[in-house]
Amino acid sequence: QLQASGGGLVQAGDSLRLSCAASGRTFSNFVLGWFRQAPGKEREFVAHITWNLGSTNYADAVKGRFTISRDNAKNTVYLQMNSLKPEDTAVYYCAAARSLSSSFVFWGQGTLVTVSS
Image 1 (tube, rainbow, N blue to C red):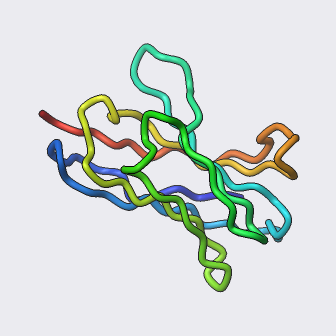
Image 2: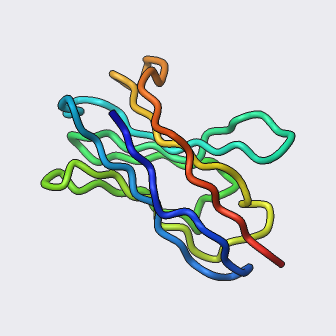
Image 3: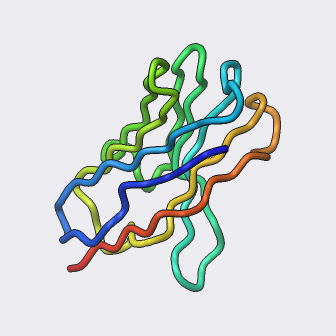
């Protein structure tokens, strides 16, 4: 299971860190990702990280502002979000895929991030 947390209400320019705690199974060899869904919009990819090697990939909209990382000991993936913009307002979801070529099949509940201008 994946449990996302850390959302909240912040002002533009602020930072926030989201956490995704994995439990119930091992996610080694998996790809852990963050997605978001803004009101009235489709869910979109934000970032992913490979659990074993720690290689990362980001959506253009967040590149340079967001950083995804993982703590193997805590079985947790983080999304550090800096220089937040109102357009970053969304429900953020963490998810897991068995490989880079697989679909994300394990999903956590979302955590709401609201950025005021």
